Length: 293
Image 1 (spheres, rainbow, N blue to C red):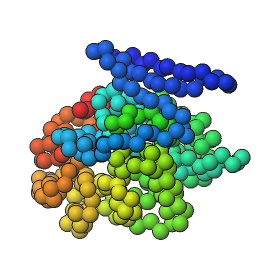
Image 2: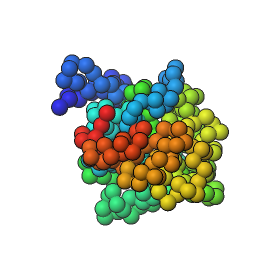
Image 3: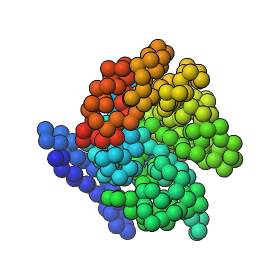
Image 4: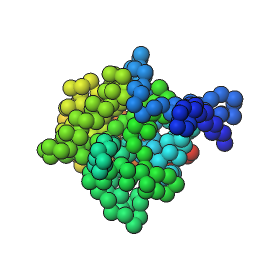
């Protein structure tokens, strides 16, 4: 088991997170950088996404290890990085603004409300301020903002962003489209003007946000289901996802595009082997200690 050492630097008013080093058994360090939330990441000098997608197989931690750990929590983030993942899948939704003018925040959550991950609550994300959401406990940890994740990950880690309100359908709600634009602007600032080098834009078959993301230079990844393959243009996306259990014929169809393919959702080594035998280029895995690079 690796030892987590947190280094903090003191400022007036108290300590703020500095650098987190996870000490490996071989004596090396895995760095988790805790940056100030307003400090942009140094722009990647190389296309990290391109290099990541060339790996065979490549691995993405679904919901930051959301089967082994409570999804989108600090434990899942640390567990995924400790297991060697170089990409994290993160679903986000925009919260409400706070009562005293606090800004809305992109919260890492799959659902549109808190009911499933925080039993006994029923708070819609879009109408609940971050000041309230941050007080709730999801299993072993509180909610995280997207910025909390970005502020910690090493510079060679990719994020697969799923903006839930515009990723799965032809979204015409003005507020959701405005939130998407705000997310693009945040990513542009957070990644020093070159988010396309660190971020993959995740969508589903009926989502139209892929075109808007591609216009900004992002690679797009579509998570498909077998019945959708005959009815969609597979060439419109850069990475194609498919259920690991889909038939060989389905996998042959998507592999024939020549694009990277990724199997979802993998929780066992047997499932991983099945997917790779069908030709998957990568694995969307959610049990980091069991299925990992």
